[in-house]
Length: 338
Ligand code: KG4
Ligand code: ZN
Image (cartoon, rainbow, N blue to C red; front, side):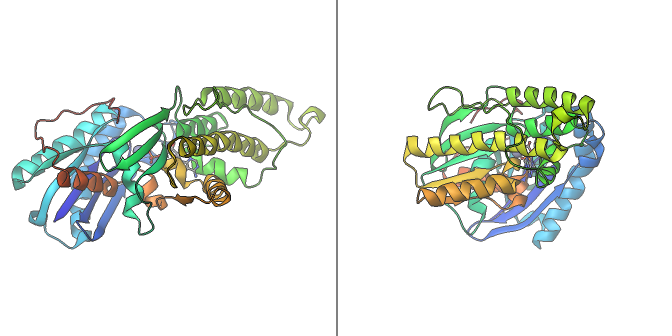
């Protein structure tokens, strides 16, 4: 059976076709980075209008690349939330029309479930149960995944998402949007230990996150650094050093909490997913730590870390298999805890 997966939860129009028991046949992402870049973040009204322009050509391209005909599709899986309401509605209503026209099931999917399961699109995949930390521009959540559809939320951010912190820090440093990759590149020229930003571990054993403190510290430090320039007080500190220290502060917290969750659950496999999991420094730190503790670590490839339709199709496939109801009348939900 072929399953079409659609995600328009944020600023990317994502459509994929997967084949049950075989894998991903196509995975098309039409990004809107150029449209929002100048604003330093996603402008919801512009995003939904752009999805409207993109959804039909992206669906057509995904079907064509999969080498099938649209009538071959057996089910449509679509993100119903969480996300930007205007953006979600574009994908959801398109999916409803398609399901109605083709007389096939419409499978509603939680975007977070897509990220939680995305690593299963890879050949090298964890066994159940596993712990997964999914971090992107919109969320930072830790789950214990006992089986598909059996998720336990262990912790989440109390304020900014990890990717959001990268984006906001990049914006205040005038580095553009999205910030994660730019900061990672800058940090490669930075030196460890020149500056320390606060790491919010919260109470002992806590699996929640908070990134607003480190963001404010970077903002204050950057202001001082910009005005003092090359003075002695700044001791030759470069923008790369600031990026390094910020990245390290975020990564240390993410790694620590992922392994706190591992200890808490006793899972043998740990997974890092979501857009922030593209970060090479973070991946290396998780790999090292897992090796030290004789555990296995897994990461989706970058195309399945950032938003994509394949993870939505996969989550939809599990829903179908486990007998979850199709629903043509489902509403979009801006907030939708998993
Ligand atoms: O999953 P995603 O594509 O979209 C959301 O659902 O938000 O994730 C995008 C987020 C952005 O905040 C971006 O800055 C972050 O992932 N990101 C990174 C890196 N690449 C993308 N953060 C840190 N390091 C990276 N290399
Ligand atoms: Zn996402």
